[in-house]
Length: 318
Image (tube, rainbow, N blue to C red; front, side, top):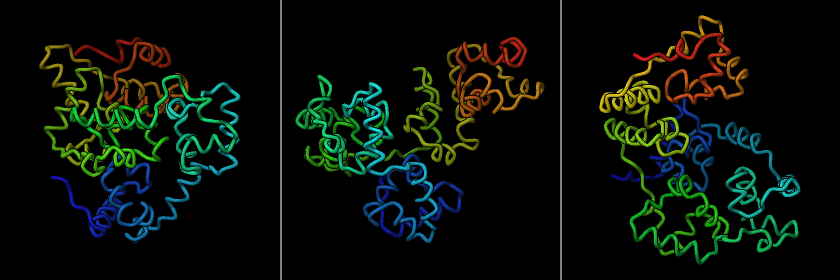
């Protein structure tokens, strides 16, 4: 059942997140609970106004956001110019795909990517891709997808159809407005999943059979970590273990024992040091240690080399 939001329930949920130690930054919260941030904007005008109304010092989160962005109009225009001079394609779809931070900031400060280019004296028609989206094509695609019963929620479209999502933002200002122009109620298009333990495991298992790990589902924002922890004690790591064991058992496959944490401890190798030596992120190494991500052959060989052992000393057949 879809939750009915009011100002009181928004404040209650914000306070609950704060008490649980979860981030109240907008980017983190929308990744965990899109429905909450949407209700906050509708009820209070902005996410940070809702945080303030909940009795939490929103300035802390605002400052973190502003420090991270560090954008203003002159800086944006200079960065767009630099990006173009280095050979970057200035079409909306290309920039949103390859430099999403710049694209998002430009739409915030100028209203649209097209307006930002106009400030530099660049006509958008001169830079758009050969098969660029037109307003008519955006509306037609939305209507066809709706007729097929496709999920038109903001989160799903922004994850799986970045080209369409970016074109909607370019021509209509937002995905929400594009849906309205197509005659579709944005609230009815929003699909808030009702999760339970069984559904989480089954969804992750089906994805795993297609070569998609639970960690990648989280990265794509198709499942959020907060939901996983709410239904599965042990969170993402435990979900990954359950999925791997279930899939292996059903398929009669060989189960691999992961001794990476043990070997690293024996060699006195820290996560930071290993990540730096093989030129990978610390998060990537943590995923491999916890078996939430299966290492590629190249990564396995690099790790074994740095630890002075064979790959078989780390990953063994059970």
